[in-house]
Image 1 (cartoon, rainbow, N blue to C red):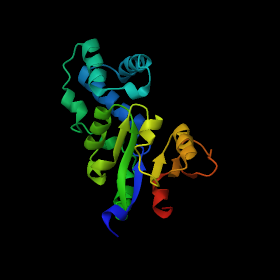
Image 2: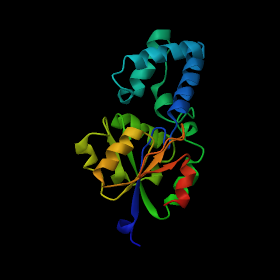
Image 3: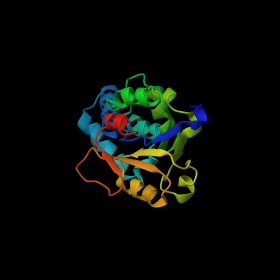
Image 4: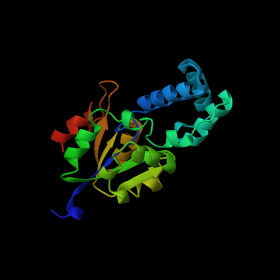
Length: 206
């Protein structure tokens, strides 16, 4: 089977391969240490920061770090937070992520279908240490992944792994994709879509 004949899998990034909760926890812990304040103080300022965003996809790491540097009058090296020097990114991968990608890369081309700032999402992908699993021609990032014009850019008949119900339902309506909903939160299912609780289930399903 030639490379171009291989089936394509597009993974959502945040809360599919990479835990946003762990990422924020890692950010908070390191910011508290560098700023010499409690994690509670970091958390309070973090909440104010996110309250001022129009949506979570507007998060940018340089603006975020600068907020703490100014508030606590501490010099913070941005490179510490835009690389994995402090383990912020690699430690936010779900435990099964690397093992699953290692198995799937044998028979599939792997890519990303993600929402957010292109620059931040690419920092996450690179700094997490798993960038080489993905075909760079199959990295799709947009501020709004539900934009119909953006969805049109995705190849037909690809497998999409996604954690957000509204995204799965939108993609389902197109009839163009094979969908897997990773729902780690509860036992809810979507009719006509395979629901999984853990990425490890994919290996025996596709």
